[in-house]
Amino acid sequence: GESVGLHLPTLSVQEGDNSIINCAYSNSASDYFIWYKQESGKGPQFIIDIRSNMDKRQGQRVTVLLNKTVKHLSLQIAATQPGDSAVYFCADLTGGSYIPTFGRGTSLIVHP
Amino acid sequence: KAGVTQTPRYLIKTRGQQVTLSCSPISGHRSVSWYQQTPGQGLQFLFEYFSETQRNKGNFPGRFSGRQFSNSRSEMNVSTLELGDSALYLCASSLTGRGNEKLFFGSGTQLSVL
Image (cartoon, rainbow over all chains, first blue to last red; front, side):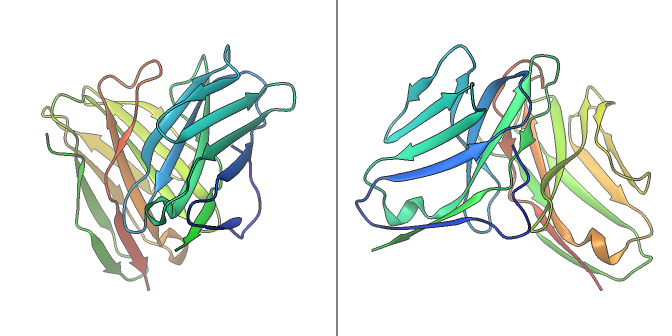
């Protein structure tokens, strides 16, 4: 994950819209990527992961896209719900490390 | 199955004091990692323990230490607290900490240093 400055990027959407959260990573050797969701007062929770030999992976209402050429990762949430309001983090790992590097996070606010 | 449990949930300390935080991993998980989360720096890795041994260490001063017990429960200690140590301290567990295992996080301990 990258350092994006002191302020947390914020994405505001209306309930029912699709949300796209972006993340850039810096290590070209990273080969495993994870998205976490952190609700207020809780620890991060695993959402979905993707390996570097894939460029897309779908879960329930979520899709992760990986573009290794530009070292970019995105999380798409379909039909966003108020319960999706949280901070979303991307994390990456290289084959030689078992410790993920977390991005700064994006705050998603869903308006009813 | 109980999740990762961290105690206490909140702590208020003054500069110069020391603090000990506790983490009970998910039953069967032997790897425990600690992270510091602040608005300015995000989630930063402190250290990881497996089978009572520190296996990985992040870039934090020696004031930050930890240990793991035979039942995989872990504690972290911060000595000579500084104002900048105010943060949410998160513990995460996984089965072995190897490969691409999922990390399961606790709700954290919110430490405020006055």
